[in-house]
Amino acid sequence: MRKRPPITRRSITHKFEIRGKDELVEGYITVGRSEDGAPVEIFLIIAKAGETLRGIARCWGMSMSWCLQNGVPMSQIVERYKYQRFEPAGLTGNPDIQIAHSIADYVARWLEITFSSRTVSATDPPF
Image (cartoon, rainbow, N blue to C red; front, side, top):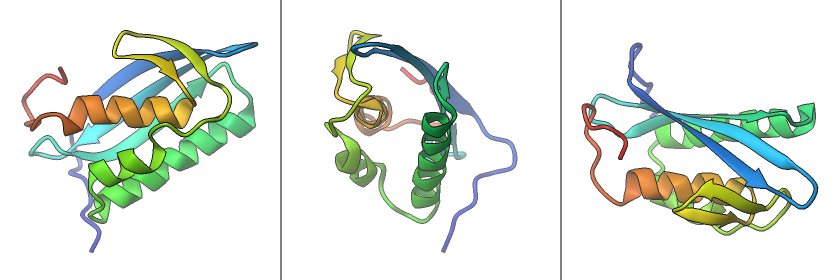
């Protein structure tokens, strides 16, 4: 049974960059949280990219949100996408994720660092 997020909710937005071979990809991950601080929705916006990449990222975020709202643990989502290898890939500006093997890898590893390593409450700051 789908658990819909509350009408008004806290969220975390994280900006990321991946310096690929020929391009710099910038994006934003926004995670909406339930009353207990658990992630319930994910929005993925890729800036300065083609419409195809932006559309796929947007749809992937919706798919992850649907999984979270239907009881799939964050740890399973992370494990599916962590270390996936495809372009764009490269160095990042994040000291915790120095090299991203893909956008999917970066997002999964950031989600793991932010939400899986500790219990997050609704009033906690993200870090």
